[in-house]
Image (tube, rainbow, N blue to C red; front, side, top):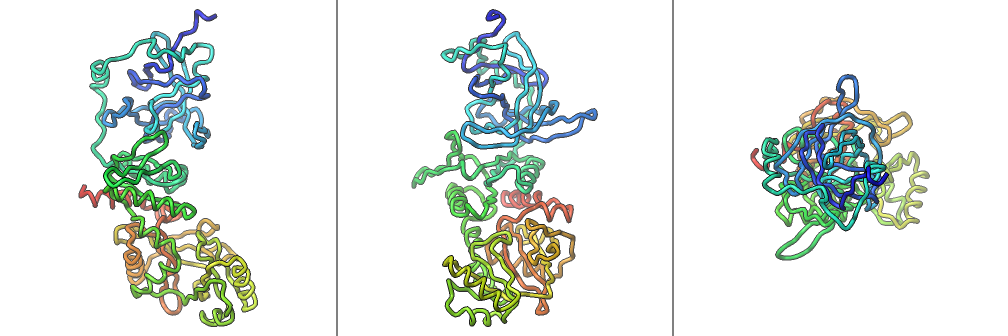
Length: 455
């Protein structure tokens, strides 16, 4: 039985004839269950009534100019846990692997392996019953010379001379993040998803650096799109600031994101710019609860935790007694709170204006579900197309400028006093607004970056 098995070293060169890959260096790893192939621009599609997936690959490590367009039958989509504990949804394809003179079908997952030492990982499922591994050896079946590699890939396509853009975020499966990646790739740019928690930095006067998992130095980016969730604002902004120190263009600066996350400071900035907001009181564990309630016109009123996000930590108190109870409850937590007048005529509706580079590119009306006063989509609110007035557009643009944000979701309510600004969001979601308006908002974000580089 042993004589029928091929002996491999810890590293080998292999090929994938059906994918048009003449040779690629693989890490042979019996400790890994599944095999993985480096891939970018991954997109599923239908071919002959069957599920397929197309993707691009830079088959040579540290060479992003050589690119091969591939497509293969789609077998599955599953969660794969990396050695570092990172969980990722990956497409699984089936194709034939060729090592030496032997060829057999294998399944492998598609993922961006830019931060890894090898474009290909050969796992034990693909080797079972066919391979023996000698971990002390390498390239037992041969190794192409640099000249041979150049000849093998002389007819492959050269990658487009677009920008190298990093999306600094937490969840690659989030609709907004997937759309931004897709929009950048559609416009010919090289897109990289950078998980905030897997980045770390070197502070140095002469050679500041940002490192990624596996020790890869992130120093070749033209632009960064920060999409920082509120729970990691501090660290995400520290990374954004480091990219700024490296002279990388960022779509929203660290200082702009930081001040937008401070509800009180952002309201003060907006007021200083002459933008009307609902009457608001602020206190830290107030003793004069009665006076605080009177300050904003009495009940009903809104009580907000200063650190709340996406409608969380926001309570409607319909009576004075309810308001006192909520304020006292927050008081027991020693929390900073905002107390705000309730705009009854808004009737559970608000307007979300999406501002990019000083222009309202899309707008929707969000309406709270029955029995709810918060119109956030995350809380079950619905979105519909609305025509915003010239005054509302002016307020949205002015608000984004006051916060120094190139990309902003500006929330406005219509009151008997005219439009009032509620909040400015530095990482607004795309799903609700793109779904309702059918506009390519993600593409507009990429265009804003191109405009900076005069493309």
